[in-house]
Amino acid sequence: YEIWKARVQSDGSLADLTQLTRSDDKWSLQPAWSSDGHWVVFVRGTPAGDDVRLPDLQNPQLYAVRADGASLRALNIAGEEPDWYGGGPAGADFYVYLPMVVK
Image (cartoon, rainbow, N blue to C red; front, top):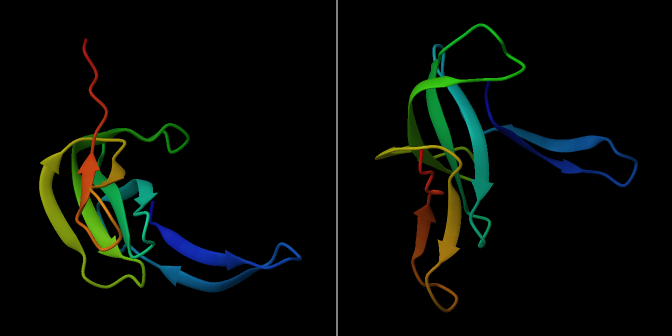
């Protein structure tokens, strides 16, 4: 799995298709856009099984990439289902947060 972005035209066709992630042996899943639209945070990991309908990852790690596909950054955080939180007024820092699951 890879993450792409595109602009949807009024007729439903896609324009400006851009591939944001590339990996030969890992899947990139669960993208979340920053509120300023400049970054995408996502989960990347090694597939844990063969069922592509219900992807499961071993050792999922968070990454961020610019909206143009440049500047891929490993965040060195294990987790899944990331989202963004704007920390203040326009131009302020943004933070990535993860849902907490208690088992």
